[in-house]
Image 1 (cartoon, rainbow, N blue to C red):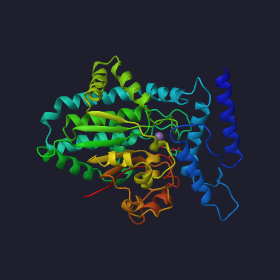
Image 2 (image 1 turned 180 degrees about the vertical axis):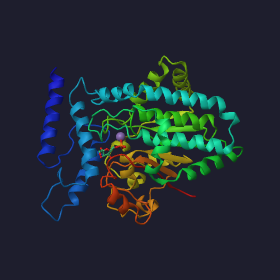
Image 3 (image 1 turned 30 degrees about the vertical axis):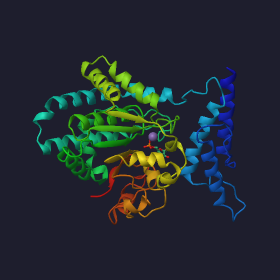
Image 4 (image 1 turned 180 degrees about the horizontal axis):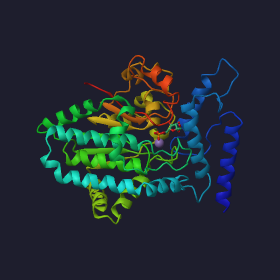
Length: 390
Ligand SMILES: O=P(O)(O)OC[C@H]1O[C@](O)(CO)[C@@H](O)[C@@H]1O
Ligand SMILES: [Mn+2]
């Protein structure tokens, strides 16, 4: 009880600071990245040195302030033992999974059916199945609890039947690049025995299942031989995946009462045991930095990503960090916005929830603004945006 009271008082202090635009204060509790966060806060202060301003909630860059808010929530919890390992978003993430169970079941059955026919598929059919699962992983990103402010945002409809209707909402479609990259790897498999695809995960629940289904397909279609996943080390942006969520979702799927669904869970657990699926934890992903700073701030992580043949970045927050959340013109090339971040060929798979988008055709952004003023923030539109040697 005492710990809960302490955490609640710390959280209400945080809420008051954010609601009344108080100065942003340093972290005080020792943790893996306390110093990194406080150095970054000093950097934000240095940007204001020629004013007598301090970093503040209503004026500092949104990417920094929003990440700071979630890291402060974590600090309130770790300052309140013995609930210092409590995941404040666990209940919402689990509810999202259970509310999406029908769609999860349909998706796992689709995967098992595909597995039985995969041998008879020609190249073009295999490509189309790959594109379907990519689109399912894209639209799975709509199910995010931070855009909805914690309100439920589960997958109610069977997403497989809606892909055609959703196609017009894909603003940048580089799926062909992903196909040619991976099918070329497959053709040269004799020499290059390993094809590694890294997936930088986003939300747990339904979206995570779409990513695990895609990862399973990549293995049994032989388009890849190993998949590396990156989640978050602390509860983050409400629905983001932690290692507990990753293991919990696999466990839940394994214990589903539908035999084909539980077969998915058994297969996925085996991939992890065999090392065909590898889960990585790194503190960088819940820090304040844009990805162009990774080479200097987390060189070990940058070196790890360099081992991939292809990196898939899921979701909106990752896109904002890939592009530095800058006010780029809509037509600035994605390569330019990455600002030197090129560990390996990469693709952002993202539904738009923040006011940043690059790599559009001339006039495309303006046309969308005219027809649908909120196109950047509703999560209705999505992209597959690729960068790498073509
Ligand atoms: O889970 P995703 O796709 O990264 O979405 C998170 C996005 O939702 C918001 O928190 C709210 O719009 C954005 O600030 C953030 O980028
Ligand atoms: Mn998220």
